[in-house]
Image (cartoon, rainbow, N blue to C red):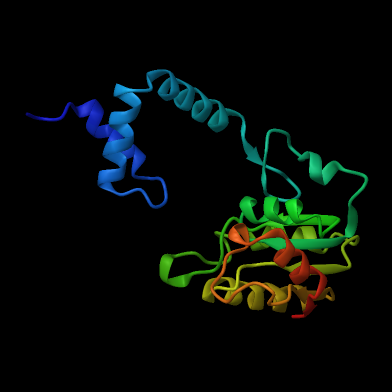
Amino acid sequence: MKTPSSLEELIAALRCLPGVGPKSAQRMAYHLLQRDQAGARRLAGALSLALERIRHCERCNSFAEEAICTLCRSPRRDPTLLCVVETPGDLLMMEQAQCFQGLYFVLMGSLSPLDGVGPREIHLDRLIERATDGVVREAILATNFTVEGEATAHYVGELLRARGLKVTRIARGLPVGGEIEHVDSGTLAQAVLERREA
């Protein structure tokens, strides 16, 4: 029996999610269609709404529904400190750790020439513009301790130091090869507190 083309398309679409292979995508599709059609409608609606409303904050480059997100508009944040992270998930983890009261810039990735990700793809032009606004005094590099994260931190550090900014790197309280999004908040807080010159 041939699988209906709309079902094949659903399975193929689910495979765009990280870590979802053909079998997992097939199980998800069958579950949504067979056991949870209301959940499938909710998922479709939420995804459609997010695609329509979510954009990048003009200041921090994270996801927002407004031109400038609530975090960037907050008068309680220290505008002289700018923490550079790879993903919105990393920003969320930093906020949950409650160890940083400055502002952020989200690169939306890390340098990876083998994957075709260069300075343009991670918005380094926007970062430089943001970091050299005359208010920022210190840029804290909080990229992951992976090969790509380290290369990104080095490259960004050189760019910002050349423009007269103090540049620090979070301490290696995180495990080598670890990703900020998956670390406990105590370890992350310690890493931020023990940051060093990059």
